[in-house]
Each structure stands twice: as structure tokens, then as C-alpha cells.
Length: 141
Image (cartoon, rainbow, N blue to C red; front, side, top):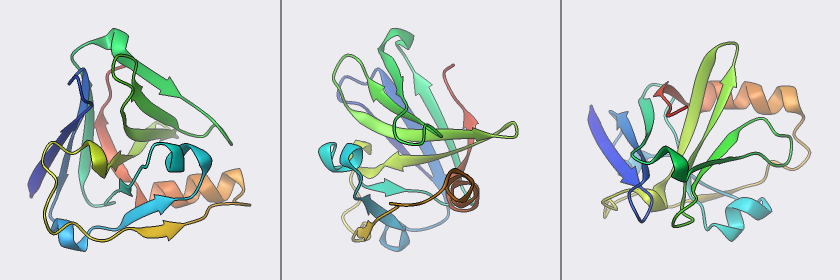
């Protein structure tokens, strides 16, 4: 297991993503929704890994919900960087990281695949996220 850390630009919020999968084998997704395109987000997750989010400055953590409002997208109020997202279902949390927020970009990180979730219903979206997103161990709220 290797822990990959990431932070926003000013380091007020961050994450630790622990996985056995090498970055060259990650499933990196380029969601085509407006939010992800405007943030140039590339998401990664592993349902067999663990993910913890942190905040050294709680006042900098901005949770943003849009679209179907099923997940909190985590942004820094200070520097504006999007670091990942969290969904809570039946008392469990699952999340994704934005690979652009990694402290060290792996040279061999997998190429992103373009993904469209248009027309996905709420129940299908929640089910997909429970299956493919990473279990979240800690959140700063």
C-alpha cells in the first residue's frame, strides 16, 4: 500500500489516498460536466483503497453541491483549488481525488478517459459511486 498525498495550492486542505494500485493502472476519469471541465479535474478512485481528507484551516474548506446534489465537492476558499469529492450514503462515505491536486504527479499516471454521466438518475449515480469510489476514513467536518 502506498499513500499519495495531495493539497490545494495554499495547503489549507488536503487528502491522503492509500492504494495498492500503481498510478499507471489507475482509472483516471475526465468527467465532461461543466464543473469538472472548468476545473480541469481528473478524478481517480479505488474501491479497495482508503481516502482521508483534512483541513489545516477549517475556514478554507468549501463544500459545493451542484447538479443532482448527491456529493460534496471540496474546494479551498483561499486559493480556489478543487481537491476531490465525498458522498455519504447509509452512514458510509466514499470519495474521489482530483489527480491535479497530488503533491507529486506520478510520471507514469494513467491517461484519462473521457466520461459522460448525462441522464444518470440519482439512484444509479449513488450506486455507481458506492461501487467505484474510495471508502473515506476521515473528513474535516
